[in-house]
Length: 553
Image (cartoon, rainbow, N blue to C red; front, side, top):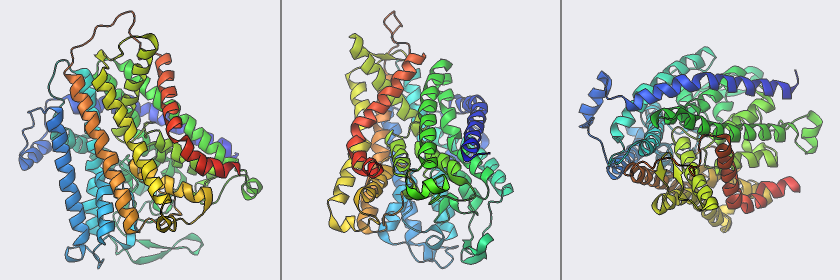
């Protein structure tokens, strides 16, 4: 079987598997977030936190609860890193330096999991488990909670509340993420991903004489990493390491986990608003954008135009021979289409246009299907912008799901869309304007510019993957990228919750002959077009200076 045919089979099997779980998982999450019953574990957690589980919150109280939880989480993760030599299970590791601890705490709490350090030689077991792995769960649950709050805004009529943050947070962890993580960890262990608490400095000789450092709760961390909770890996080479990603089928399974929840959440959205077909429209937009990206990334990597790629038939540099070019390209597309950030190949070694696709995926706002929760609320923001544009075309007040999109709503949606481009472009400009920061680039010219642009795109969109080739373990980059992560996460969340509160207070608008149908292929095509055009207009000049210039040279 040719590499292209094998890659196609790999992609088709993923599509079928995701289609099979779309309805049952989406329906399960609908029940999780709409039931009024609390199980025994949840009631215990509410008593411990002092939470009134049956009391709902306005969008402002919901946002303040979320921010308070996040600030406390940042301080806790920072403190564990700085004090790890005085805590148990440190394995003799030194305290993490202040700027790396700051960057890492921000990174994991914002669901980015960008790592400016080598995990196996910097963090002891307690820091890995109690600080980083915990945030893999709760930061993902925060994204799911925000998405559900926005959906409630569309679903409710003349309401002053959008739910209870603490209830949504706990249910997301206890009823969704933990069960899937437990089952997924067993599958990965069966596939050869190790699960132990060995000393991290034990050296093991692998096939071919390669030496690797073992240790840590790798299987558990791997599966929660892949659940859309981002790319913080125990090993520095992440999912390219055989202890984190053992075989071709574990590679397939990790991609499946990356896409699992984001592709199921539109079903939850459709059920909650009482129109399942609206959920199908949203997932169709996600699927079109995702499939186009996966196909293009594969094409660019399988048909590299340089001398060596043409000689061997594909761009093998930076790829794991266990997976091959196509499966690595599919992983790269999936991890940047979502806010996962795990990698099984070096994106810095991709062809110029293949590397451009990984950046473009993040520049889309990670909505195809996006991160856990974040993808859904990002796509709903784009749907709001689309109906506004359509309303301007026909001279009619735009409506979406029975709610008017007025001045307040479109201002919130527009500001949401502008946050990450501002962070990406300003951050890149500052880095390129300083000779000291340019010195961190491994390459010069367009490729070096791409390394910097990728770093700020990844941080601002809370992705966490790295292009490689850029030395970011410096005080300036740690602070600058940390600021991009925190503003790129929480400013959009506040805008989304404000939009949810505004929509929830509205009375329903009855449909009329002039109402734009938002469940038909026409609307799906409009959302796809608006998404691509907005991103192209925003980022095309920057891409032209980097990967496009390199690809055309």
